[in-house]
Each structure stands twice: as structure tokens, then as C-alpha cells.
Image (tube, rainbow, N blue to C red; front, side, top):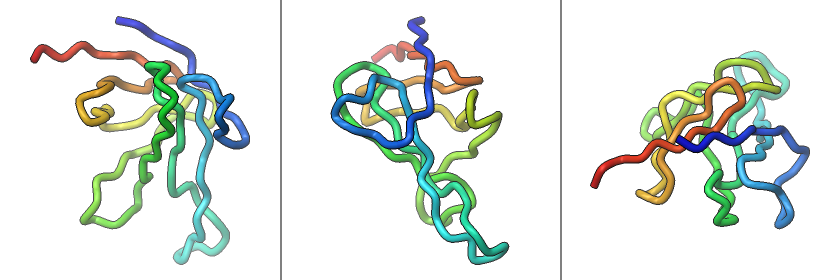
Length: 102
């Protein structure tokens, strides 16, 4: 299994390295202020795609992820299956590709 380090950046750009990420903030209607509403990252495979995952609490009709751990070493649950392109996990700040037979 290939593992790469995840690193938080201020913004995702064309020069952002694979697996690097930033948090997307949204208004928090319950508590006021803002909360993390999305997790944006460059695909860990190196293809250059920028992906966004909605973070819970989120619209129940849409797939969303739990963000666990710290900002420096995040964990996402469940695993990520990007359209059959990249399947893997982010656990304690490390992206790990999982080979799926098929």
C-alpha cells in the first residue's frame, strides 16, 4: 500500500501537491460563527484533480464524512472511493491507497 503525508495549506491551487488539503468554512447557524463544512484536497494519486468532501453535520440526502483527529493529522470516515479512480483512506494525516479487486 502506498502512503503519502497529508499537509494543510491555506488554499488549493494548480501548484498544490497531491494529498495536500484545506478546510472550507461555512456559517454555523446553531452556534453562530463558522464551522468546517468541507474538506478540499488534491487527489493523492497525483492526477491533479481537486476534490471536495462535505463534512458532517451536512444535508442528510448527500454523502458526507466525519472529520476526526486534529487539523494537523486529520482522519476522514468513511473511506474515499473517487469514482473508481482512487480508493483509500486518510488516517492520522496519512493517505493510504487501497487496491480493490475488480
